[in-house]
Length: 377
Image 1 (tube, rainbow, N blue to C red):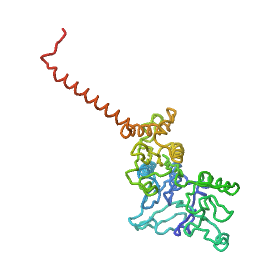
Image 2 (cartoon, helix red, strand yellow):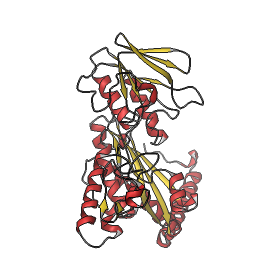
Image 3 (cartoon, rainbow, N blue to C red):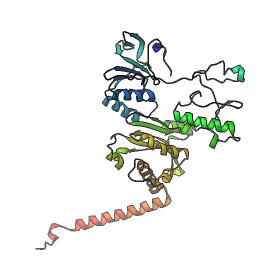
Image 4 (cartoon, rainbow, N blue to C red):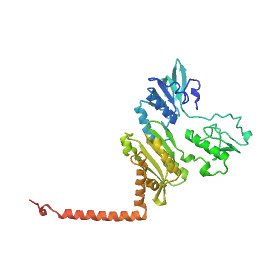
């Protein structure tokens, strides 16, 4: 775990030690860091009865997630009586110094106040610890270790030198998730033992890598999950990117299970063929089953499927995943009626019939006056 300098001289906890002696009910716990690990452990300890305060950065909780998702998690934390302590404007952190005396932590803030806690949990990330002497530039004839992260620099086949491969958290500039490390292990072993490397079987697709934060509700995202990233990565005009969103509380299964009313599924689309086709690039899910729904979105994004293709895939009812078929069917039908040749003709004919029907109805109503009505006695 990465530990900031101001906390190195106090007896802090990390995700590796916190549950060896979990905070007791009523204990005051300060969580330094608001990423996935910090948020998961903060909420877990709060549900165990601890009085939890999270010291966040300038972007608040889960800074890498969509703003809408962060807002929902913030409300959930407030409902769980978790305090969210923000830094002053222009500063990246709240605490200026940290001391420990008589079993009490004291944090002096940049606001000038003193905060007291019984336990201190550090969750600001992790850093590779690799002896530089084993991976020196002289030994390999090239720069092996990343200067900032301390991790090993690898190519897309996870090789850093001839017949040398790396996998897991020791790699530089790759998200440090368990499922990512497992996939890297498979790819490294495959490339080391089997001949022939190709992008389809022997590389890790970082762009479409899923991630889930196991808070309550869960937050997950995969692939390209926002417009700005899509425009930058794909080098397309912003008009070619659309976002469709659906409240999962409208789903019958979610309704039965009393899903969070703010839970949602959001998909990012790349518009092709003059609007006739929409390919799914990725998305964001927040809700009690976010991680489960994200698995299908990851498969969709990795295989570059369109909303029409997903709409044609029959989903069982009632399931949480039925949301995806509903969303994609709505989008596919909209594109058919607005952009396809037959859809335009059908819409024009329907509108003309509808208009004529309204006109005839109007004429009938206008020609019927009170004096002309016949009352059957």
